[in-house]
Length: 129
Image (cartoon, rainbow, N blue to C red; front, side, top):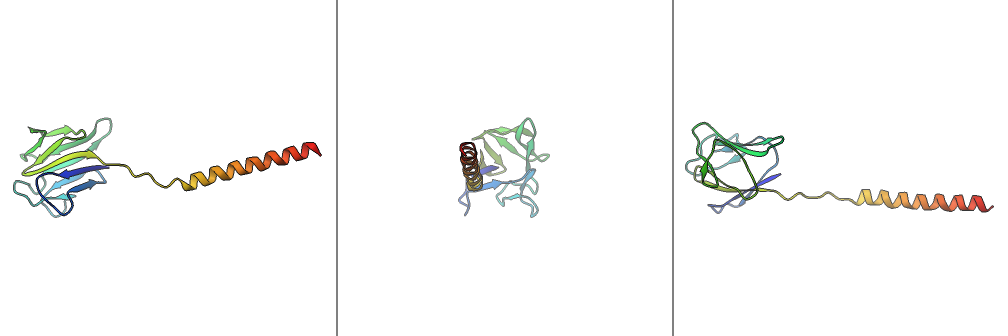
């Protein structure tokens, strides 16, 4: 997952998490990340996942997208990159990954160890009788 920190305004939620690709950024109602700020086009840019390359941003034709102050049409993003889509300023980060619960795996491991110990005791008992 990817997170975008909103840098230039005080929204209720200053962090937007991107959970799927492609992720469209713009002002239109159907986009994934919607911004109403000046200079943001209906379909301003798209975040893409490109195998072997990583996460890239691609601007719509004639839309202003800058990465670290440099205007780009398409560019691979790295942690900490600052994006500008019109007047919206964002910072790109790889989001923290939440680890799922491991208790089922641990319980199975302990049960397997207990069964192995019981099997060894049974074998020792059979050999001594």
